[in-house]
Length: 165
Image (cartoon, rainbow, N blue to C red; front, top):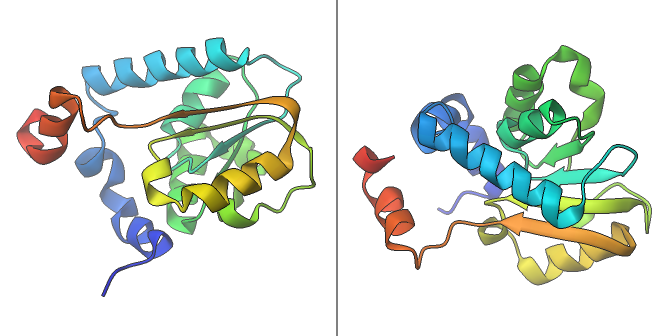
């Protein structure tokens, strides 16, 4: 039986950062900073914009964006992952998180300036997700995703050989 994305991420939440991501290691910390800086530059992120991070996972990118002075709302389909993100970012940030499937965002049309996500597109029905993202995005808004490039031999080996993580 194939687990839904919600069930899968609920099942790995307790070990997500330590087993499935390398955010706690120097290379992982560097990768987060690099990608956050790319999001900031590509979408001209700054205060005053309505920014949504979809699939926030354990909150590593949310935390880095907030540390860079970028206000961001974050959502995830997994309640357990969302709780991890809330704890990581800090209790005062709870109002910036909400449980939601990207295919049915509880937001009005044309309400966001920017939508970003990291390593999530391969978990989604991309056509439906893009349709929903475009529904909530203002005209002229920015969408940016960072995805693992399995064509890159380094990424491929890292994903296949745990020791390389």
